[in-house]
Length: 73
Image (cartoon, rainbow, N blue to C red):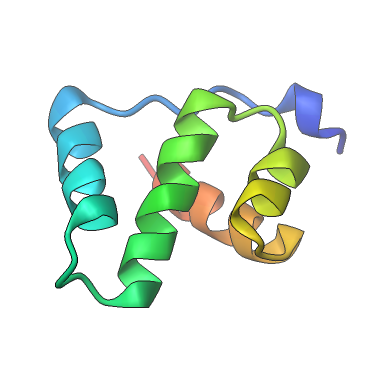
């Protein structure tokens, strides 16, 4: 499936604020902060998983996994 066909990842304001807090807070575990950044970037530029992965220095599978995790509705 082409990345451009992904549905936009929509976050509520509360979800966005929580993720931003985790991404910025120095006491947050590295893995949690990275996952928060992945989800936030996917919400901003959700149709391009490869670009999100490249900007964060993770593999495409990792970015895809955490984006998909947030799509459970």
